[in-house]
Amino acid sequence: MPVQRREGGPGGDVLHASVLDTLGLQITSGELAEGRVLTLDGIQERFGVSRTVARETMRVLESMGLVTSRRRVGITVQPPSSWQVYDPRLIWWRLAGPHRDVQLRALTELRIAVEPVAAARAAWNASARERDRLVDLAARMRRLGEAGELAEFLELDIAFHALLLESGGNEMFAALREVVAVVLRGRTSLGLMPDKPVPSALDLHEEVARAVAGRHPEAAELAMRALVSEVRDAVVPVNGPGAVR
Image (tube, rainbow, N blue to C red; front, side):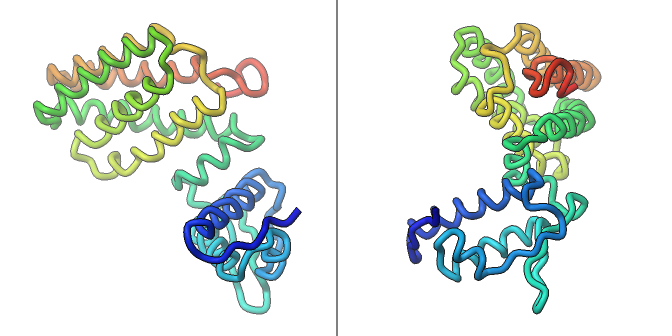
């Protein structure tokens, strides 16, 4: 059933987001397959939106590499090799789709490759204030995690990993903070994590924080490697045992 047309203003922004999320999910799930040709007229008719909303939706999808637009050809769905795979919204769509186990595995492998080195860099370069904050975050995460306060725990977990990525002074690592944030949020909101953080994960967060605070880069790297590797065991399998390993 078409969505009622709304023009401009905050309502128009909400409507644009709804159309964008619907098409993004359909493309990343494969429901709208590679090579499928869309038109602005078709989008307008399907969703009951204005030409402006349809055009802006396609502009965003094109900026993410999901479609290309050519005169007299139309709007063509592109293969995954063209996608901007680090875009947080695209990551969310893939986590919400039928191939989430594949996306989780790829993202976990990325974290294993990057975050241990980022922790070592933080042990070298973090300021005194950043070191103190990291230790405080880890301690508060333990209290909230053991109490089962998962919403608050999640926000601290995101802050912890963002601080590690930022405080080492490597701008390439820092640029991944939103990627890690959407992974942490997605795992929790999609029910892909246990009801409580496992004790070893809480221990390792504190171990990483202590190593960074004490300026021990090798220990920080080893502890972070153990932590992100443990993620593979903590995530609830999506399609049976071992699905996200």
